[in-house]
Image 1: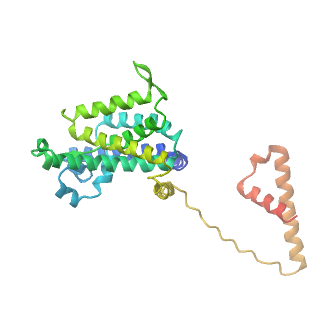
Image 2 (image 1 turned 90 degrees about the horizontal axis):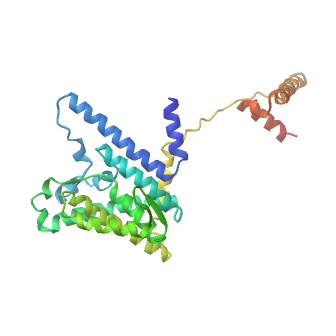
Image 3 (image 1 turned 180 degrees about the vertical axis):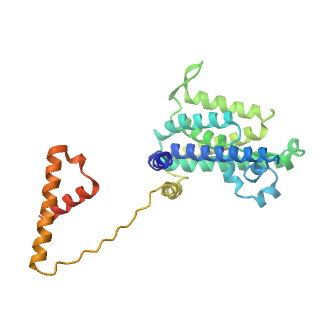
Length: 292
């Protein structure tokens, strides 16, 4: 269980970026393992449809949780790899200007807004009328784009370094992505690009409101604290009963035994240093200091 303890400690002590990456990875691994089990049992894998975001409003009303679960759901390895790399890179830029609770709040708001734009567009534009009943959305892209756009609006001239391209101002990267999402609506990933636009608009709106002194993610602090407590180690209460000395002889005997223990601890410190003490020995020495 040592590995599991290390993962819990990393989740508990890491940044909100670390926690979001862990959550996405955990869901991805769980889904793929279940998919293998379905494959081995020669059954159709229908689990995803219970957590993907449907564009059909009637189905969405029966599965309202999908407006949140879809933004943590990935099935293709390259899809989750790219999303988590972008989350890591641009999440760190975001945290240079905003705090961790704001990142979590914007991740969720960007995902919800992206999902809402996706559902609305698929039911408003006639071109989607033939596919609205069997179209689903999954992935964290809308959430991550919201974080990227907020950082770009906050510091548009900040340089970023792109592979094979080199140094580019963040505002140009954001503008290029925004235009590519609009153009991409007419491609095979129309739903994803519509969701990206919803996430981008949310990121810009957050940055504008923050500049005006308003924080639309203030509620996320409570949620972040709750997520951290999921992996918080439980404290075991240790109850000890001490019997008071019955007479002077017993009192002197206990006092002599305690002093012998203190002397042993001091000898251990002189030989091996303070760090060599056990927790109980340090506690005993601390109590001795308080009593004098």
